[in-house]
Image 1: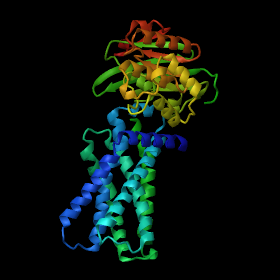
Image 2 (image 1 turned 60 degrees about the vertical axis):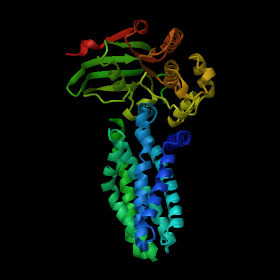
Image 3 (image 1 turned 45 degrees about the vertical axis):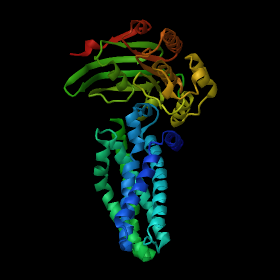
Image 4 (image 1 turned 90 degrees about the horizontal axis):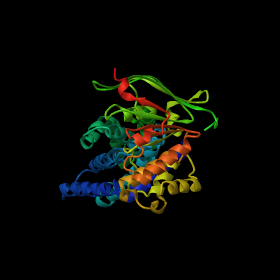
Length: 221
Length: 214
């Protein structure tokens, strides 16, 4: 199964490199969003913690703009049936998840780098813990976004439905991530945030299990 | 795939399909076995494509079931795609890839290692070899249909489900398609859904769908 999923992932990567279906839109979105935040702040001095919260807001909306493409592009081009005739649902979900994980990580690393350059107040004191929550947060975001993308790809109003459906599912994840980022900026030690990190791990596992259980029904019917 | 020489059978048991309030077909009962060419005919809108999709496991029936068997063992629903080859005008390939890339990627996703010699022979058979490296987006509808035939045959399946296989093809293309069907019918099950008399004349048994409306 892993070999087939990797083949699907590579197919998506080559397809993306040729069509630039998601990358161009995502990069533009990230640049525009950070610029808008920058211009709206102007010369105002904003608190350190506010930049930490805004960081995840940018990530959330960037994910909403880019991570649905894997399934939506298959549906729009009409290649869903070809994939259904080629692989079983778990292979398709794993392949698309790999693609969203890589796309999500690349996108969020770019956001983090731009953010660190643009905002002086975005300084992380507990870098190790931040890297840990950044990885766990990205996994949760990619898993949830992949499943929701599969659902909305069948709908008519894909663009509007995606953030609307994603919001309640991603809200607990985002709240913990914002909270943990604030703690990391304030210089927290691992023992103080173990519970929150455990919740992040549980969120990722629950979403991953739920996705594999539900995807077959979304994909095949 | 195990049990390579075993007879493949496809049984349709009390199959009914209803879209909304519209009855497509009702209580369809049929059994297909290897080897053989079977036809499905009927005027437009009688559900030929729907039946083929149900047989391929692409859509679920409202009532009844389709059972795929190889020898005595029933093939699980999630494995059916490995045993069937499917070609239809509504099957879409990836426009951004060349024909050979499409076939190779799809074979790898299937978990197979592309057999270069066999794939080349298929491209030659459907007269697409010279254009195999061209992007599919530049293909004519007839060339896309030839590519769909290669997609159906590339993993050497036991059953071939062809929905209007000669659609968009010129006379030469139709002849190639008929030759493929005749050659493969010696050891495979071929199901043709079509209105074309020239397609149906190849079939040893034809199911007329308009008789399953009541």
